Structures are given as C-alpha cells and as structure tokens.
Length: 124
Image (cartoon, rainbow, N blue to C red; front, side):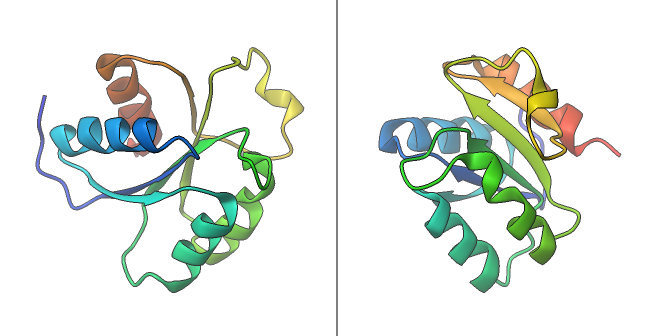
C-alpha cells in the first residue's frame, strides 16, 4: 500500500544491494530514504543533514561498529528517532541490547513484514 508521507527513514547497512532493495520498498510505501553504508556514515548523516530523520533501520552487524552501539549518539542528536534493528541472524531476546528499540526486522524479510515493522515503529 502506498501512502503519502513526509517521513524520512535512514537505512544503514553495508550491503549495497540490500540498501537499494530497502530503499525501493520504502519508496513504494511512500517514505523518503537516506542511505548509509557504515556506522560512521550514519553518524555523519545524522549530524549534518537538515532533514528530520524519523526512523533508522540499522543493521546490527556493521563492519566498523556493532549497530546498537551508535544508537545513543544518534538519539542524542535526534531524541525522537525510532530505531528498527535488523539482522540476518535473528534476535530472539532484545533485552541483551543496551538500547531501547522500536522494532526488529529479520533479513531477508518480505515487503509486508517491513511495512508492518515500520508502521508499528512510527505509530503514535
């Protein structure tokens, strides 16, 4: 389902193909997308962009840093940022993380699974 929205989602993953696929799916849902290939890229984007980022879909295992370790810095800059953690390895227990997350997306996931996770994370 395509909806018109002014919401922007930051997709953070080192896999170029997956980032492009997620951007395509999110665009189809009506979201604007910014991509980052690493934790350092993500922090730089969050610090420098004038665009309000509503949510970040963040790979747990990035080459330069574990994804959940950059969340506190991103939330310091954007306190209302919704964090959706993503992993191909699964995460049965999110209590092991030192952060509060707003959703989890299992890679590779379907369009409907992504849509559900996004809708739940962004709902008031």
